[in-house]
Length: 248
Image (cartoon, rainbow, N blue to C red; front, side, top):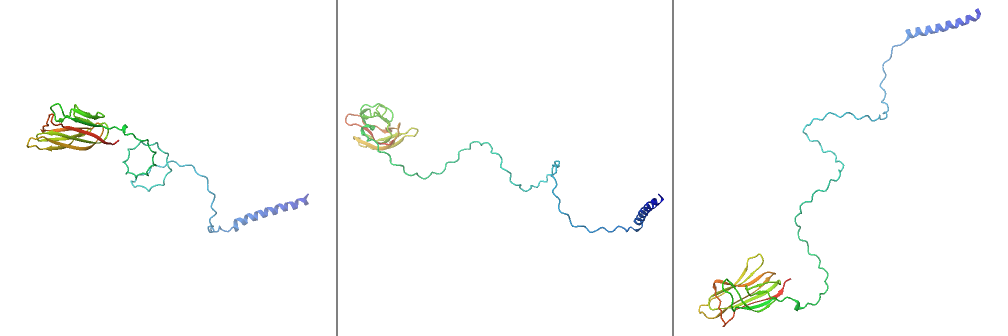
């Protein structure tokens, strides 16, 4: 028993001695800390972090009065509702004449007997007195019935070009006019005058060609002072008129 315990105690003693020696050595033989080493090279960039949460709205900016640069053009907005109809623009210039059309088909043969042919002739026999319109009261011919013997006027019913003439007998100075009128216009006058210093029978005459529309009138009118017409069986005064050609 005594022999076995001796090596054991020796082992314990040696362990304690080594521990004590290590402790003393650490406290007595430790060198002071060295200087910091040089900074090493930057490390590799790290991975991007996660997207942060939206921040709180900032305070309103201060208005400086300086206009900023124009921003980028935004996306087109939605189409608005149609606007109101505008006023018509001015008429454009007259276009160039178009190409001639195709030749039409031949019409049916015409019949001259189907065409209107207004014509009249009248003389003075027992006309009413008064007024300046010369009335030719006795009708010789009156095709289409457009001359009115009670008023002395021809009233147009067929538009076209007409020929009118008169021959009036007088023994005095005389002035007569062929009058024509259109709707809404002042009468047109074509005058004829003749002097008679000897008191003999003489004839004053006149004629004209006029274009008439429906409703236009033609008559003979005398001058209020120089308008005395002979009335007797020795000589007749006559008023004539007829259509030369229509103008439909």
